[in-house]
Image 1 (cartoon, rainbow over the protein chains, first blue to last red):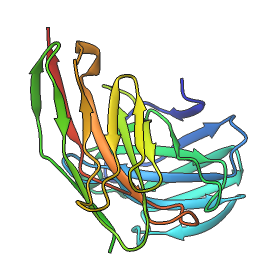
Image 2 (cartoon, each protein chain N blue to C red):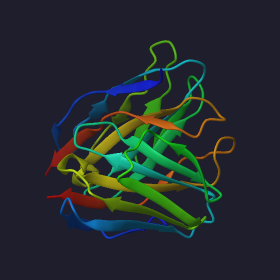
Image 3 (tube, rainbow over the protein chains, first blue to last red):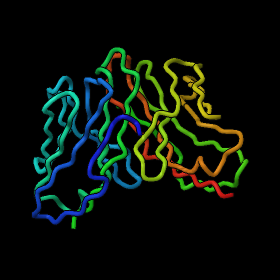
Length: 115
Length: 113
């Protein structure tokens, strides 16, 4: 257990469904991230939050909607997804952005399949 | 822009064999370099890092040396075990004030008993 917990571990959803991914960290970190991991491709940074404020949206389609109610919790709301959105979605946290950044702590990911 | 290129897998080895995974990078300035490992069914874990030229990162028997002259950060282990079977990612961070990591595509390593 890394200290970053993601639920659910696996999710199968239809293209018309609405679902949410959850990420929780108890490390006292201030920054949280969503990454998409597709087969044979580099990890893609999707969203960045620092002290609950979104600091980056990496041109992610609006069918992905992040929410960060506090520094410990991060959600990714999903609706009307496409089959090509099937991937492993990884949450990560770090103490701070920028200076003093020691590296990310990753969760185990949610394996999403869109049918 | 900043990018990382690592050797394509999959790599299959026998136990106690020598492992090398090549990683080269393109970046301006003085990036920090990382290796992450992803065991089956898990997220990524930081394996080792180096923050300046000629630094050597090491952990769990793995080593990588930051070579600015060849823009490389190759991962090595002298004697692999079955438990080293995983996907290995090379990554760079552009500068000390930059939080973004640029990842390679990952190299799948399978070690047979």
